[in-house]
Image (cartoon, rainbow, N blue to C red; front, side, top):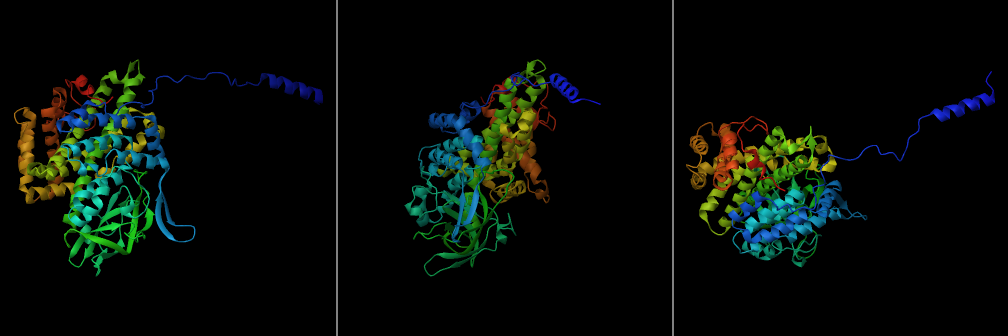
Amino acid sequence: MTTTAETAETAETAETTVPRSNPTAVTHDVTNQPPPLTGHDLADDAVLIEAVRREGAEWHLDELHRLGRFAGSEEAQLWADQANRHEPVLHTHDRYGHRVDEVEFHPAYHHLMNSSVGAGLAGAAWADERPGAHVARAASFMLTTMLEPGHLCPISMTYAVVPALRHSPDLAATYEPLLTSRVYDPGLRTPADKRGLLAGMGMTEKQGGTDVRANTTTAVEQPDGTWRLRGHKWFTSAPMNDLFLVLAQAPGGLSCFLVPRVLPDGSRNTFRIQRLKDKLGNRSNASSEPEFDDTVAWLVGPEGKGVRTIIEMVTMTRLDCVLGSAAGTRAALAQAAHHVRHRAVFGAKLIDQPLMRNVIGDLALESEAATGLALRLAGAADRAQRGDAQERAFLRLATAVAKYWVCKRQPAAVAEALECLGGNGYDEASGMPRLYREAPLNGIWEGSGNVNALDMLRALTREPESLDAFRTEVEAAAGADRRLDAAWRELRDELAPTEDAALRARRVIERAALVLQGSLLVRHAPAAVADAFCASRLAGDRGLAFGTLPSGTDFAGLLARLPH
């Protein structure tokens, strides 16, 4: 029988032999991890700066660098993270039961909006008479997209609404000065009493989507010249904006209308927000389903010509989709390049290892081609607004081509860049998952891939001057590279109308984008970049994934173009 004393002795002995933790011991040091990518200038980027100069906005470079330093700052990046983690919240009613239909945003969202409107990314370019104003705005838009793209949806729509609104000069005279303001003035109040306005659009409905002619929202004219709308929109972003262009069926056919959230007398217009969309990405931006019920509206453009009127807005938002996808690709490349410059594996920095050089070089090539094409479109838009008919014709076809291809390539490029970071890139703290969730967005908004491929066919058949302008652009590089010349000869045959044109449209638009990018790079990029592009994208000397460029590629030349 064990005594109490024996039990105590056994327990004491056991206690002295139990392993104990030493809380002061150092288990590991953090080594071989890249430093945070903050405190730098996003505009310290030769590819971007060269394109801005080439397209006529060199005067904007000081401001571009100022914005680049802001976008690269720790504070701005914290705002970007907060705006996405603390998503918009819908309040349909106040505490007393009154309908309010307001969306509450985190303060970080308002900080970003204030910065972007103040930098002129909304409508300010339309009030700037300097040549290159739209290029300057496009470059700044790209830098800000690299910081946080979600808040730029209302910014983009405000930029795009101005040319459409000009179809009704009286409405433009009233609202354009406030749409081109550099003052962010949030909150629903009488438009005329605000220091700046933001605009949106409502086109799609659940039964039609892209087929807006299937819309069922109705418009009835009133004796005072206004109209009353009744219906439901399926996807209307930024519902806290002040004004919206909306498509509705009038007696004369589908028409475009201006719908303010607050009427001139200060009363709320009927704009019932049914819910906010729970989206894959773009979480900082509120996208909604509004319902109109005896909603007051003003006709914009001729009755029955709604698509023709609002297409001016769609064209400009498609330009921003191209800019946004080029910027999203470049943001992912910057993260990957930063990681491989600092991370060592098997005794050497990743950036110095042959296979990683191939991957990063291939991504850099993709990004430079996208950036150059995006800013070429911005230059065309700028010159078209100043009366250049050739540039307007080029923009008509090239926007569809670029929208298709640059937006289509972004998800693949971002996924490859994320893989460069390995498990670190899969962690939310890296920011890469946010870039990845955002990547498919521009390929869907303002027309999916099929819509843009078919739009290319319409341009080719209905506006032959657009093909002439496209041909002039491509042939500016004639004779400089045999692979580009051969690809253009083949593409010319593909562009001829055939019975199966719709079936082949994706093949044709893809090839058109690559030939156009090749022409731009052959004329403007270093030889290492142009040669690698023509070899891999036009002559087909590569595999199906990134990182499959052939031996003999000038990787040092490609990596010299990486953003810092």
